[in-house]
Structure formats: C-alpha cells, structure tokens
Length: 111
Length: 113
Image (cartoon, each protein chain N blue to C red):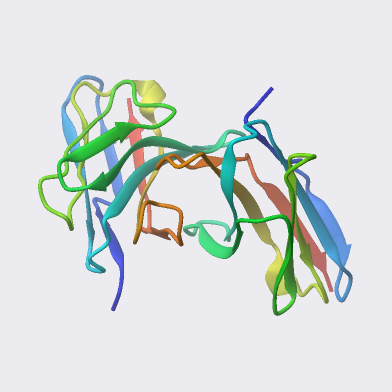
C-alpha cells in the first residue's frame, strides 16, 4: 500500500459544478496535510493546508480531514476551466521534515 | 521578489559525469528540500534540510548528495549520474520545519544518456 494514495483520474466536471478530490494516507501519526495545484509544465503551488479534523474553507476551496478514517479531501465549488490542473495531496508524517506526496489527480473542467 | 531559483533549468549529460544542480532562496527560510517528479509516481522527496548543516534523507536519497553550508543555498549533487536519474527536479523552501507553505523553484529537467 502506498503511503499517500490518490486516484490519478482524469476527473472531468462541467463548469460550475463541484469537484471532489480525495486522498488516503497510511501513517496514523501524520499531522499536517496539504493540497497543491500544478499546472502543466509549472511548479506546484499550495492551495490549502489543514492540521486538525473537520473542514477548512478558503474561497471556493474546502479541505476536509478525517483522521479516524485517514482521508483528506478537497472540494472545489463553482469549478472553472482555469481550475483544470493536477492536484497533489501531501502528508507530513509526525513532526519530521518529510513530506510525502500522492501521485496526483488530474482535474478537467469543461466549459 | 520572493523566489526560489534553480540552475540549470535544462541539462543533458552522460552517465557517470558528476553534476550539481543549484538551488537558492531569498526568503531567509530555514527549511529546504529536493524532490524529483516522474510520470505516474508523483513528487518524491530526495533530501531535506531543517537548517544550516542539518540534512536528512527523504524517500529516494540513493545516488544523490546535498549540502547546506549557507541558509540560502541547497545544492543537489549527482556524483555518478545514471539514466534512471532522468527526471524533473524541484527545489522548495519554507519557513518553520517544512510544515508550512513550501515555495517551489521552477524545476530542472535532467536527462542522463
């Protein structure tokens, strides 16, 4: 089992819909969880991070963390074609400097 | 402008020829890290550094060396590159211990023939 798993997609949603991206992780000691967006040919950029159970909202983006079930999700409301990118989930195990990424989910938002 | 710079951006080399990819940040960040990105495998951490003179292995350190003699610089050294090190490499930095936002450099595409 990979330490951080994501469905590689592509996930295709129509413009204006809600896109839901999921990530599971294996290390129960993980403390910090991150969502990065990567456009083709570009560097990853941080969208959101979350440390504790529950939801965190920032504009159209909501991150949800469920430590008991070991998953973290990202919801994108009112999806736009400009949201089309690869979304990378990253997990920081314990209090270390390590950061473990999933393989990424490609999102396509169709006009 | 706050940024992470990498050089070179593109490099084609031959097996066994030592090379160094430089990484520099101007944000006074304590934490720096190197990743490689391969299709279907995502980003994998090679080495990270929590501060000057402190480095630790990530998930795929074999075949790589790093050093952190100054806060702003974190070079990646391939002493004897092999074709399986052909990849896209990213350097990143952050304040704190890496648990905060990591700023990524533009990437270095390395081809080893």
